[in-house]
Image (cartoon, rainbow, N blue to C red; front, side, top):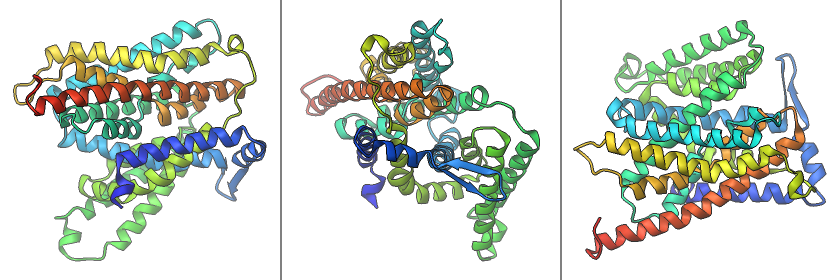
Amino acid sequence: MTLIRSERFSAGLLLAAAVVGLVLANTAIGPGMLDALHTQLPIPGTGLDLSVSHWISDGLLAMFFFIVAVELKRELVVGDLNSPGKAALPAIAALGGVIVPAGIFLLFATGSGYEGGWPVPTATDIAFALGVLAVFGRSIPNRVRVFLLALAVLDDLVAILIIAFFFTQDVQLPFLGFAVVAATGFGLLSRLLKPRSAWILARRPQWPIITAMVVLAALAWAFTYLSGVHATIAGVVLGLVIARRPGGRVMHILEPYSNTIVLPLFALAAAAVAIPTVGLGELSPAFWGILVALPVGKFVGITLAGSLAALIATRRDRPALRLADVAVVGALGGIGFTVSLLMNELAFARSHEVTDEGTLAVLLGSGISIVFAAIAVTLRSRHYAAAARGSAPD
Protein backbone atom coordinates (compact mmCIF):
# COMPACT_ATOMS: atom_id res chain seq x y z
CA MET A 1 0.00 0.00 0.00
CA THR A 2 2.94 2.33 0.68
CA LEU A 3 4.15 1.80 -2.89
CA ILE A 4 0.71 2.64 -4.30
CA ARG A 5 0.70 5.93 -2.38
CA SER A 6 4.24 6.77 -3.51
CA GLU A 7 4.54 9.91 -5.62
CA ARG A 8 7.25 8.22 -7.69
CA PHE A 9 5.09 5.17 -8.40
CA SER A 10 2.08 7.33 -9.30
CA ALA A 11 4.09 9.47 -11.73
CA GLY A 12 5.67 6.42 -13.36
CA LEU A 13 2.32 4.67 -13.78
CA LEU A 14 0.77 7.82 -15.24
CA LEU A 15 3.56 8.19 -17.80
CA ALA A 16 3.45 4.50 -18.70
CA ALA A 17 -0.32 4.63 -19.26
CA ALA A 18 0.01 7.64 -21.57
CA VAL A 19 2.77 5.97 -23.58
CA VAL A 20 0.73 2.76 -23.89
CA GLY A 21 -2.34 4.70 -25.03
CA LEU A 22 -0.38 6.62 -27.67
CA VAL A 23 1.42 3.51 -28.95
CA LEU A 24 -1.68 1.32 -29.10
CA ALA A 25 -3.66 4.01 -30.91
CA ASN A 26 -1.05 3.97 -33.67
CA THR A 27 -0.93 0.19 -34.17
CA ALA A 28 -3.28 -2.18 -35.97
CA ILE A 29 -5.58 -2.33 -32.95
CA GLY A 30 -5.80 1.46 -32.81
CA PRO A 31 -9.10 1.87 -34.74
CA GLY A 32 -10.80 -0.78 -32.61
CA MET A 33 -9.50 0.80 -29.44
CA LEU A 34 -10.75 4.25 -30.45
CA ASP A 35 -14.15 2.80 -31.39
CA ALA A 36 -14.35 1.13 -27.97
CA LEU A 37 -13.57 4.41 -26.21
CA HIS A 38 -16.34 6.14 -28.18
CA THR A 39 -18.92 3.43 -27.43
CA GLN A 40 -21.97 4.87 -25.67
CA LEU A 41 -22.90 3.39 -22.29
CA PRO A 42 -26.25 4.91 -21.27
CA ILE A 43 -28.03 4.27 -17.98
CA PRO A 44 -31.69 3.81 -18.96
CA GLY A 45 -34.18 6.16 -17.35
CA THR A 46 -31.61 8.57 -15.96
CA GLY A 47 -30.70 10.78 -18.92
CA LEU A 48 -27.06 9.75 -18.46
CA ASP A 49 -25.68 8.73 -21.85
CA LEU A 50 -21.87 8.93 -21.93
CA SER A 51 -19.22 7.23 -24.01
CA VAL A 52 -16.60 5.08 -22.33
CA SER A 53 -14.13 7.95 -22.73
CA HIS A 54 -16.50 10.42 -21.09
CA TRP A 55 -17.36 8.04 -18.25
CA ILE A 56 -13.64 8.20 -17.50
CA SER A 57 -13.08 11.96 -17.99
CA ASP A 58 -16.41 13.13 -16.53
CA GLY A 59 -17.08 10.35 -14.06
CA LEU A 60 -13.96 8.70 -12.67
CA LEU A 61 -11.92 11.90 -12.88
CA ALA A 62 -14.35 13.51 -10.42
CA MET A 63 -12.66 11.32 -7.78
CA PHE A 64 -9.31 12.96 -8.56
CA PHE A 65 -10.84 16.43 -8.30
CA PHE A 66 -12.49 15.44 -5.00
CA ILE A 67 -9.04 14.56 -3.62
CA VAL A 68 -7.61 17.83 -4.94
CA ALA A 69 -10.42 19.79 -3.26
CA VAL A 70 -9.93 18.01 0.08
CA GLU A 71 -6.20 18.78 -0.10
CA LEU A 72 -6.96 22.40 -1.00
CA LYS A 73 -9.33 22.72 1.96
CA ARG A 74 -6.75 21.26 4.32
CA GLU A 75 -4.12 23.71 3.07
CA LEU A 76 -6.54 26.62 3.49
CA VAL A 77 -7.52 25.60 7.03
CA VAL A 78 -4.35 24.26 8.66
CA GLY A 79 -1.72 24.10 5.93
CA ASP A 80 0.55 26.45 4.02
CA LEU A 81 -2.32 28.55 2.66
CA ASN A 82 -4.13 29.29 5.93
CA SER A 83 -3.28 33.00 5.93
CA PRO A 84 -2.83 35.69 3.27
CA GLY A 85 0.85 35.96 4.16
CA LYS A 86 1.49 32.26 3.65
CA ALA A 87 -0.55 32.10 0.44
CA ALA A 88 0.97 35.20 -1.16
CA LEU A 89 4.10 33.59 -2.63
CA PRO A 90 2.51 30.50 -4.25
CA ALA A 91 -0.56 32.52 -5.28
CA ILE A 92 1.48 35.16 -7.14
CA ALA A 93 3.68 32.47 -8.69
CA ALA A 94 0.61 30.47 -9.76
CA LEU A 95 -0.89 33.61 -11.31
CA GLY A 96 2.27 34.17 -13.32
CA GLY A 97 2.17 30.52 -14.34
CA VAL A 98 -1.30 31.05 -15.80
CA ILE A 99 -0.95 34.47 -17.45
CA VAL A 100 2.35 33.92 -19.29
CA PRO A 101 1.49 30.52 -20.87
CA ALA A 102 -1.94 31.83 -21.91
CA GLY A 103 -0.27 34.87 -23.46
CA ILE A 104 2.27 32.75 -25.35
CA PHE A 105 -0.49 30.49 -26.66
CA LEU A 106 -2.44 33.51 -27.91
CA LEU A 107 0.66 34.81 -29.70
CA PHE A 108 0.54 31.66 -31.82
CA ALA A 109 -3.23 31.21 -32.07
CA THR A 110 -4.61 34.73 -32.54
CA GLY A 111 -6.45 34.90 -35.85
CA SER A 112 -6.52 31.11 -36.31
CA GLY A 113 -9.93 30.53 -34.74
CA TYR A 114 -8.40 28.44 -31.96
CA GLU A 115 -7.98 31.21 -29.40
CA GLY A 116 -10.34 29.34 -27.06
CA GLY A 117 -7.54 26.88 -26.31
CA TRP A 118 -5.64 29.38 -24.14
CA PRO A 119 -6.43 27.47 -20.88
CA VAL A 120 -4.73 24.25 -22.08
CA PRO A 121 -1.12 25.19 -21.15
CA THR A 122 -2.03 26.88 -17.87
CA ALA A 123 -2.36 23.73 -15.71
CA THR A 124 0.18 21.84 -13.59
CA ASP A 125 -0.16 18.12 -12.88
CA ILE A 126 0.22 17.77 -9.09
CA ALA A 127 0.89 14.03 -9.08
CA PHE A 128 3.45 14.11 -11.86
CA ALA A 129 5.30 17.22 -10.65
CA LEU A 130 5.59 15.86 -7.11
CA GLY A 131 6.66 12.49 -8.54
CA VAL A 132 9.53 14.03 -10.52
CA LEU A 133 10.59 16.02 -7.44
CA ALA A 134 10.51 12.86 -5.32
CA VAL A 135 12.57 10.84 -7.83
CA PHE A 136 15.30 13.39 -8.57
CA GLY A 137 15.23 15.70 -5.54
CA ARG A 138 15.93 13.57 -2.48
CA SER A 139 18.17 16.23 -0.91
CA ILE A 140 15.92 19.20 -1.66
CA PRO A 141 14.41 20.67 1.55
CA ASN A 142 10.75 20.18 2.32
CA ARG A 143 9.97 23.90 1.95
CA VAL A 144 10.46 23.55 -1.83
CA ARG A 145 8.01 20.63 -1.93
CA VAL A 146 5.51 22.61 0.16
CA PHE A 147 5.83 25.56 -2.22
CA LEU A 148 5.31 23.28 -5.24
CA LEU A 149 2.30 21.61 -3.61
CA ALA A 150 0.70 24.94 -2.68
CA LEU A 151 1.34 26.35 -6.16
CA ALA A 152 -0.03 23.23 -7.89
CA VAL A 153 -3.14 23.18 -5.70
CA LEU A 154 -3.83 26.86 -6.46
CA ASP A 155 -3.06 26.18 -10.13
CA ASP A 156 -5.68 23.43 -10.15
CA LEU A 157 -8.13 25.74 -8.39
CA VAL A 158 -7.69 28.17 -11.30
CA ALA A 159 -8.22 25.26 -13.70
CA ILE A 160 -11.43 24.33 -11.88
CA LEU A 161 -12.70 27.91 -12.15
CA ILE A 162 -11.81 27.99 -15.84
CA ILE A 163 -13.76 24.78 -16.42
CA ALA A 164 -16.72 26.15 -14.47
CA PHE A 165 -16.88 29.54 -16.20
CA PHE A 166 -15.46 29.00 -19.70
CA PHE A 167 -16.54 25.46 -20.55
CA THR A 168 -20.10 25.54 -19.24
CA GLN A 169 -22.95 26.36 -21.61
CA ASP A 170 -26.76 26.21 -21.49
CA VAL A 171 -26.96 25.57 -17.76
CA GLN A 172 -30.15 23.82 -16.67
CA LEU A 173 -30.91 25.60 -13.39
CA PRO A 174 -33.36 23.01 -11.97
CA PHE A 175 -30.76 20.23 -12.22
CA LEU A 176 -28.09 22.56 -10.85
CA GLY A 177 -30.39 23.30 -7.91
CA PHE A 178 -30.85 19.57 -7.26
CA ALA A 179 -27.05 19.16 -7.34
CA VAL A 180 -26.66 21.93 -4.75
CA VAL A 181 -29.24 20.27 -2.48
CA ALA A 182 -27.51 16.89 -2.78
CA ALA A 183 -24.08 18.40 -2.08
CA THR A 184 -25.44 20.33 0.90
CA GLY A 185 -26.93 17.15 2.35
CA PHE A 186 -23.61 15.38 1.77
CA GLY A 187 -21.75 18.09 3.67
CA LEU A 188 -24.21 18.14 6.57
CA LEU A 189 -24.13 14.36 6.98
CA SER A 190 -20.32 14.42 7.00
CA ARG A 191 -20.47 16.51 10.19
CA LEU A 192 -22.00 13.50 11.95
CA LEU A 193 -18.77 11.59 11.32
CA LYS A 194 -16.50 14.13 13.01
CA PRO A 195 -14.56 12.52 15.90
CA ARG A 196 -16.46 14.40 18.64
CA SER A 197 -19.89 14.58 17.03
CA ALA A 198 -22.91 13.49 19.06
CA TRP A 199 -23.45 10.58 16.65
CA ILE A 200 -19.93 9.21 17.14
CA LEU A 201 -19.86 9.83 20.90
CA ALA A 202 -23.14 7.90 21.21
CA ARG A 203 -21.41 4.99 19.42
CA ARG A 204 -24.09 4.75 16.79
CA PRO A 205 -23.30 2.78 13.61
CA GLN A 206 -21.58 4.78 10.90
CA TRP A 207 -22.66 2.71 7.90
CA PRO A 208 -26.10 4.37 7.48
CA ILE A 209 -24.43 7.80 7.29
CA ILE A 210 -21.75 6.54 4.90
CA THR A 211 -24.34 4.87 2.68
CA ALA A 212 -26.45 8.02 2.53
CA MET A 213 -23.37 10.12 1.71
CA VAL A 214 -22.42 7.80 -1.16
CA VAL A 215 -25.95 8.08 -2.58
CA LEU A 216 -25.95 11.87 -2.24
CA ALA A 217 -22.50 12.10 -3.86
CA ALA A 218 -23.72 10.05 -6.83
CA LEU A 219 -26.82 12.23 -7.14
CA ALA A 220 -24.76 15.42 -6.93
CA TRP A 221 -22.55 14.17 -9.74
CA ALA A 222 -25.49 13.06 -11.91
CA PHE A 223 -27.42 16.31 -11.44
CA THR A 224 -24.28 18.33 -12.16
CA TYR A 225 -23.78 16.45 -15.42
CA LEU A 226 -27.43 16.89 -16.40
CA SER A 227 -27.23 20.60 -15.58
CA GLY A 228 -24.65 21.19 -18.31
CA VAL A 229 -21.84 22.05 -15.87
CA HIS A 230 -18.79 19.83 -16.33
CA ALA A 231 -19.36 16.91 -13.99
CA THR A 232 -15.89 17.01 -12.40
CA ILE A 233 -17.02 20.22 -10.65
CA ALA A 234 -19.22 17.97 -8.49
CA GLY A 235 -16.08 16.29 -7.16
CA VAL A 236 -14.64 19.69 -6.31
CA VAL A 237 -17.77 20.85 -4.48
CA LEU A 238 -18.07 17.59 -2.52
CA GLY A 239 -14.40 17.85 -1.51
CA LEU A 240 -14.91 21.39 -0.24
CA VAL A 241 -18.12 20.75 1.73
CA ILE A 242 -17.12 17.52 3.46
CA ALA A 243 -15.99 17.97 7.07
CA ARG A 244 -12.20 18.06 7.33
CA ARG A 245 -11.60 14.99 9.52
CA PRO A 246 -13.82 12.53 7.63
CA GLY A 247 -12.65 14.21 4.44
CA GLY A 248 -9.07 13.32 5.23
CA ARG A 249 -10.04 9.71 5.91
CA VAL A 250 -11.99 9.46 2.67
CA MET A 251 -9.07 10.97 0.74
CA HIS A 252 -6.75 8.41 2.34
CA ILE A 253 -9.06 5.60 1.20
CA LEU A 254 -9.57 6.91 -2.34
CA GLU A 255 -6.00 8.00 -3.08
CA PRO A 256 -4.69 4.52 -4.03
CA TYR A 257 -7.61 4.03 -6.45
CA SER A 258 -7.02 7.47 -7.95
CA ASN A 259 -3.29 6.79 -8.38
CA THR A 260 -3.58 3.27 -9.80
CA ILE A 261 -6.89 3.27 -11.69
CA VAL A 262 -8.45 6.69 -12.30
CA LEU A 263 -5.45 8.74 -13.44
CA PRO A 264 -3.80 5.95 -15.49
CA LEU A 265 -7.11 5.16 -17.20
CA PHE A 266 -7.64 8.81 -18.02
CA ALA A 267 -4.06 9.16 -19.29
CA LEU A 268 -4.44 6.05 -21.45
CA ALA A 269 -7.77 7.18 -22.91
CA ALA A 270 -6.72 10.81 -23.43
CA ALA A 271 -3.40 9.85 -25.05
CA ALA A 272 -5.06 7.35 -27.40
CA VAL A 273 -4.81 9.50 -30.51
CA ALA A 274 -3.58 8.72 -34.00
CA ILE A 275 -0.46 10.75 -34.77
CA PRO A 276 -1.43 13.11 -37.62
CA THR A 277 0.26 12.26 -40.89
CA VAL A 278 1.00 15.86 -41.79
CA GLY A 279 4.15 17.89 -42.18
CA LEU A 280 5.33 20.27 -39.50
CA GLY A 281 4.07 23.21 -41.54
CA GLU A 282 0.56 21.78 -41.60
CA LEU A 283 0.18 21.51 -37.84
CA SER A 284 -2.26 24.03 -36.38
CA PRO A 285 -1.20 27.14 -34.45
CA ALA A 286 -2.87 25.54 -31.41
CA PHE A 287 -0.30 22.72 -31.52
CA TRP A 288 2.65 25.11 -31.53
CA GLY A 289 1.07 27.38 -28.94
CA ILE A 290 0.65 24.51 -26.45
CA LEU A 291 4.04 22.97 -27.26
CA VAL A 292 5.88 26.22 -26.49
CA ALA A 293 3.63 27.59 -23.74
CA LEU A 294 3.86 24.56 -21.44
CA PRO A 295 7.65 24.23 -20.98
CA VAL A 296 8.58 27.86 -21.67
CA GLY A 297 5.53 29.81 -20.50
CA LYS A 298 5.10 27.99 -17.19
CA PHE A 299 8.82 28.23 -16.39
CA VAL A 300 9.08 31.92 -17.22
CA GLY A 301 5.77 32.86 -15.59
CA ILE A 302 6.33 30.98 -12.33
CA THR A 303 10.00 31.97 -12.03
CA LEU A 304 9.47 35.69 -12.67
CA ALA A 305 6.28 36.03 -10.61
CA GLY A 306 7.61 33.78 -7.83
CA SER A 307 10.91 35.64 -7.61
CA LEU A 308 9.08 38.95 -7.38
CA ALA A 309 6.75 37.57 -4.72
CA ALA A 310 9.69 36.16 -2.73
CA LEU A 311 11.07 39.68 -2.38
CA ILE A 312 7.86 41.00 -0.83
CA ALA A 313 6.53 37.93 0.97
CA THR A 314 9.59 36.73 2.90
CA ARG A 315 8.61 35.42 6.32
CA ARG A 316 10.90 35.56 9.33
CA ASP A 317 9.80 32.19 10.71
CA ARG A 318 11.06 30.16 7.74
CA PRO A 319 14.01 30.25 5.32
CA ALA A 320 13.38 32.23 2.16
CA LEU A 321 13.09 30.47 -1.18
CA ARG A 322 16.01 31.36 -3.39
CA LEU A 323 15.72 32.15 -7.08
CA ALA A 324 17.12 28.71 -7.94
CA ASP A 325 14.41 27.03 -5.85
CA VAL A 326 11.68 29.04 -7.56
CA ALA A 327 13.19 28.19 -10.96
CA VAL A 328 13.09 24.48 -10.10
CA VAL A 329 9.40 24.76 -9.25
CA GLY A 330 8.89 26.72 -12.49
CA ALA A 331 10.43 23.87 -14.46
CA LEU A 332 8.17 21.35 -12.69
CA GLY A 333 5.15 23.57 -13.35
CA GLY A 334 5.42 22.92 -17.09
CA ILE A 335 4.29 19.33 -16.57
CA GLY A 336 0.64 19.91 -17.50
CA PHE A 337 -0.39 16.38 -18.38
CA THR A 338 -3.67 15.28 -16.70
CA VAL A 339 -5.47 18.60 -16.27
CA SER A 340 -4.06 19.98 -19.54
CA LEU A 341 -5.35 16.91 -21.39
CA LEU A 342 -8.80 17.52 -19.89
CA MET A 343 -8.66 21.20 -20.85
CA ASN A 344 -7.64 20.20 -24.36
CA GLU A 345 -10.66 17.92 -24.72
CA LEU A 346 -12.98 20.68 -23.56
CA ALA A 347 -11.40 23.51 -25.56
CA PHE A 348 -11.33 21.71 -28.93
CA ALA A 349 -14.35 19.45 -28.51
CA ARG A 350 -15.76 20.58 -31.87
CA SER A 351 -12.63 19.80 -33.85
CA HIS A 352 -11.43 16.21 -33.53
CA GLU A 353 -8.28 16.83 -35.57
CA VAL A 354 -7.20 19.79 -33.44
CA THR A 355 -8.01 17.82 -30.28
CA ASP A 356 -5.57 15.12 -31.41
CA GLU A 357 -2.91 17.71 -32.23
CA GLY A 358 -3.49 19.37 -28.85
CA THR A 359 -3.09 16.02 -27.09
CA LEU A 360 0.22 15.42 -28.82
CA ALA A 361 1.34 18.95 -27.95
CA VAL A 362 0.46 18.42 -24.28
CA LEU A 363 2.37 15.13 -24.20
CA LEU A 364 5.40 16.58 -25.99
CA GLY A 365 5.38 19.83 -23.98
CA SER A 366 5.02 17.94 -20.71
CA GLY A 367 7.75 15.54 -21.84
CA ILE A 368 10.14 18.42 -22.51
CA SER A 369 9.26 19.84 -19.08
CA ILE A 370 9.90 16.47 -17.43
CA VAL A 371 13.41 16.27 -18.92
CA PHE A 372 14.15 19.93 -18.11
CA ALA A 373 12.76 19.58 -14.58
CA ALA A 374 14.65 16.34 -13.94
CA ILE A 375 17.94 18.07 -14.81
CA ALA A 376 17.11 21.18 -12.76
CA VAL A 377 15.95 19.18 -9.73
CA THR A 378 19.02 16.91 -9.87
CA LEU A 379 21.43 19.84 -9.96
CA ARG A 380 19.63 21.62 -7.12
CA SER A 381 19.50 18.41 -5.08
CA ARG A 382 23.25 17.96 -5.50
CA HIS A 383 23.76 21.53 -4.30
CA TYR A 384 21.80 20.86 -1.12
CA ALA A 385 23.57 17.53 -0.60
CA ALA A 386 26.91 19.29 -0.87
CA ALA A 387 25.71 22.04 1.49
CA ALA A 388 24.73 19.39 4.03
CA ARG A 389 28.26 18.00 3.90
CA GLY A 390 29.62 21.51 4.50
CA SER A 391 31.30 21.88 1.11
CA ALA A 392 28.94 24.51 -0.32
CA PRO A 393 27.01 27.44 1.13
CA ASP A 394 23.21 27.06 1.23
